[in-house]
Image 1 (tube, rainbow, N blue to C red):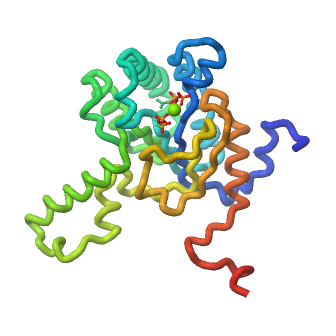
Image 2 (cartoon, rainbow, N blue to C red):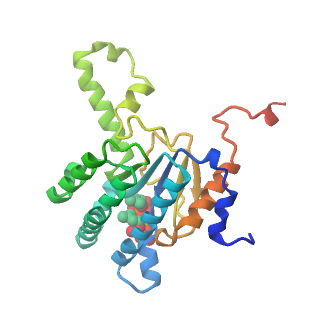
Image 3 (spheres, helix red, strand yellow):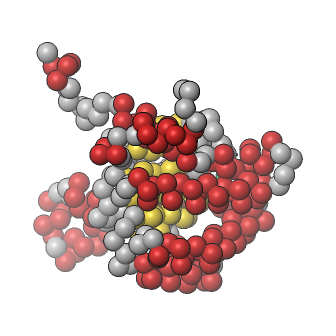
Length: 252
Ligand code: IPE
Ligand code: IPE
Ligand code: MG
């Protein structure tokens, strides 16, 4: 493409921007290793990508942005890395909460935050409460998140409800399940982006991505900035979403 990367925004059809974008932010460790830096330097660099992608999403009129920040499996990492990640999250919230609120962004978390430390938990709760009435972009951060665990919780919550409402035992619907997920009330992602060239879902939004368009890029998360988001959206806009049906051209 001949135009400067930032100019590619002009190739985006502003009437067909994905309403919900989900991102598996991956490759921070490799970004650091390439520079002979400790892994945490990659996580720190990734924060700037979060800022840019959030800002660009607001500008483009994306309705919801969901970032995978920490999976239930990420506890397997060395305690020093886990601690550093939690500390970065705290720093991020401290620095950005005013800015999020000012931009009418509604901040929420997906996942089991009860396992996070008390300090971080209360900061998260504060950020969620403070932005609860904001009507702009919905900014969801998946923390201690697992798609399978989310589904199990939904099933178990429905079983508990069934004790009072035995009609549920006659059959559970998709709506019942959706209503009990962390994403209750949010539309499913239209576009799922994974950075760092890994073709895996890694337990992210298993239910919700049933018909998401997937974009995998080799770019490592700390290098993933505005132009990369534009490219993902441009590619998304060229896709035909068929949902198992036929487009008019194929039906002929
Ligand atoms: C993604 O980067 C951030 C988290 C999972 C917290 P990684 O830390 O997984 O980076 P790589 O995959 O080792 O390069
Ligand atoms: C997925 O990345 C989780 C997050 C981005 C938070 P990982 O780096 O943990 O995933 P795997 O281990 O490569 O599947
Ligand atoms: Mg990784």
